[in-house]
Length: 345
Image 1 (cartoon, rainbow, N blue to C red):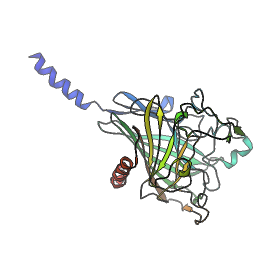
Image 2 (cartoon, helix red, strand yellow):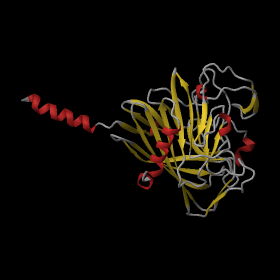
Image 3 (cartoon, rainbow, N blue to C red):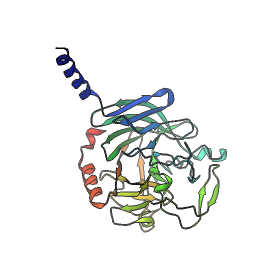
Image 4 (tube, rainbow, N blue to C red):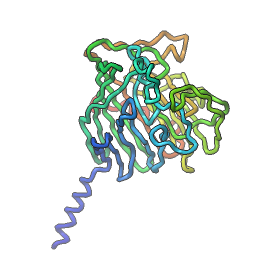
């Protein structure tokens, strides 16, 4: 008799247990996301960063695909671009302010020309059987504290045995003055990947070091470095940079397993199809707010929001086991492009 009572209760509890858990931890300035009990990513907003980011990001096999520096440096990593941490969203010219390059490494005399994105509150952190939802609010501020933009971002987290995905729906609303996004290379949805997912380097390059100064980085040891960019237009490697496409993917080997990271643009986005700011040293970025800077034959792109007006950007980030490939990416892109994104925001 007891077994007949207990068994249905246990089944009911199992059905109610969310697979995708989104748990806010305000004391530690973070929101943690797990899938089937395994860490996926965290939305973090430490005082040491000039914008909130998702960090780290893991694949379904548990392998971390994001670079550790500057938050958690690992051996053999490049020490450059300290503003490139995890997955972020900002731009290099917003009313003349540089939100992209801002970090603690910026000299004090350059601080007035930089912008900061400040997390304000978690609106919703909801776990679920098939997806987890996180809605947050942030402010884009000048150095003097004046708020230019109110940001509302809705993240949707999903995953199965072979794939993880993040939908990011970001709405920016101008506050007390007109806000202009100018054509700039430094933008907009950015991801900095682990050393193994970089493309092998064949020449020295100049980077910004941890102190904010330019420094020459010699050709590094390419052992285990296997990344390769591919775009929806069939371009590969360094040829992807500065070109447009519906999606782009980066494939490589991590911990002896092939992994593919992809960013999908949405046809409703400004500037669609996006330009790719994809660099062999590990920067993977979709830039819908640059045009002439990538193609001098094109007219300059300028997006202005009058006070109270808004613009929304929609992207999907995918981490999958295996090689990805054009056919698989096209399926993923069509699914994202045709989804009812309005109901997801």
